[in-house]
Length: 414
Image (cartoon, rainbow, N blue to C red):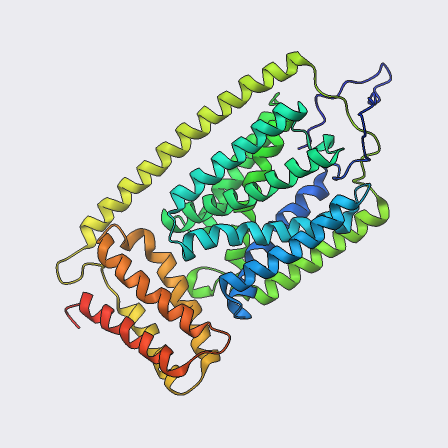
């Protein structure tokens, strides 16, 4: 899907160049199949690399965010200083924006306990305002029009919000609504395919491009989670380290190929679309927004109703959160390992605890929101203690004992 459909052509069919005051050579690539391949790879790396830095290396959310933010600023400085598109610099910036955008959403969700619904709404508004101001100032949102520093600033701000929004939307579907990562990925893939068909039938190319760009984020995240999750959780169990290494290598190979062949280099800028086409694009935008609002709203409330019915059928007075035996088994294992000083083993089981908790959130939270929040806080404390770069043994043991106390208090049959 490209956004060149609105470009006027000469009688020979070639694009007609138009001078742009103070224009640079294009700072972004041509939208080809390679663009979408690397984009999906980058979004997957954004998910797996942030997990690798946060969990495997023990940097934590704050440390990972600072490291990713500093690297992103450094690479963007090089990108803005460049006079033309350079594949290596551009795609390194996209990888880092992917990591940082993921972390922004994770900080809101895990650090500040911001609801995913609110995060989705917040980033939707932020992205919408960015597009509105960008279009008002520049008259186009085409990726092929990134020819001046101001347009490039709008472009990268929009890219950041697309990654944050895609992360929040994907997590909302996969975790909060309990659809799972594979199902979420298939749903998102279906919407992208529908946008592609609509583009072929006349959907404005710029609108179609940004729809696909936003949705490839939850698609890539779903792929990443499916590859990294353990087989017990329905994944392939490859782990964040291996998955990140494989995808980064794939990105590197494609970027080197593009750098050598220059197949995605834009030689000359397109002129802005005609006013008639702009008016048609606005009407299409309104129609698409209404369609997405109705479809997503209907799906959200229908899924919530289904989860409430399942919760009412499963909850009992002596088990307000259902069967917690799996969580107790994991916590028991972690406690034994912590007392033995095997913190590598503790961290491995901590991954299992987090995956199991996230996987059951949609089912358990409606059963008893207050008790779910209490247990969620106890689990968060355990994860923070055991994932510290230098775990404090007694503090880890205490946190695990407190979690077991919470579990036993909720499960009166114990």
